[in-house]
Length: 349
Image 1 (tube, rainbow, N blue to C red):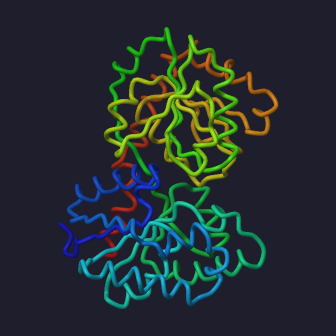
Image 2: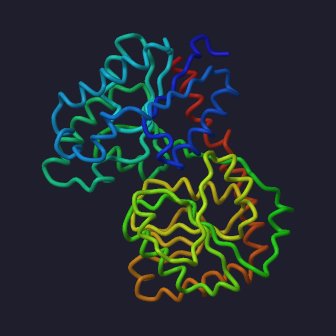
Image 3: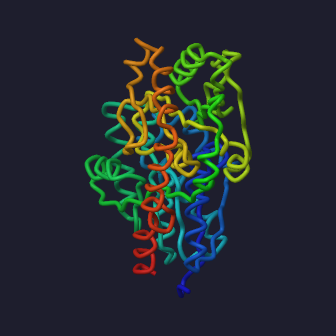
């Protein structure tokens, strides 16, 4: 057991992001298995950060005093737990790093995305925000990113070397169970929050192309734009935890990711992989997997009927695709995905 093993994970956005819930649930299991005493600090009442994201980020984050004020505010909350190590989960919490370090606390910054990209901030304002983020993030003991591609972006934009730690997965269904899914009616699962107007548009188009007697489309009832989806052919679901979701969603056949966003990684990909669900991805770039069918949103908007071809393609070789997915699981299994992070934590501890 590590000598300094009391660890706090601070998140002000936990219940607003099913992707973050999944990633942290995997990470917490690995940390506990390696002897760390983990406290998840879900600060859902952090109105300061939430206000910044919702209304004022592009105006206030370009000023250093904003980062300093937010940082002290967060650090003082976290330090009440007397942690040895603190994980901070979004880039706007990086201002807490200097105060935490001054108290002898090791800090780990989990970068899932960049606020300037999420809010599409450009020009001089973007440069100023990234400059402040770089100044604070560079003081962390470890900066963690979910993919190699995003790590390259962080190095280019912030001048910071990070380590890659994918969300990882635990297989939630046996190969036998997955191969017993009946193919008389195909269930398609969209497990992402709908955070962009085009995501709502894409789901509407997909639903319009699917005959109800053959296909059933389920979508996560969450995100700023899910109310934009009016189709009665879409069935909605919401479960409070990933564990509860798995119980109900593992029977579905195919995963769907439909978004115009260039995200560093899609946690929903790991979720579908853990359920042995082949993927259809309507994304700007392919996801790094050989077990998906891919088209860009621009192309799909021109020819939405291709969704039927994609589904039929998967169904025609469904069992072989599922077997291939199963072979890939071990390489992405949780303990393997997190090994590098655990090794470095032990070094700095």
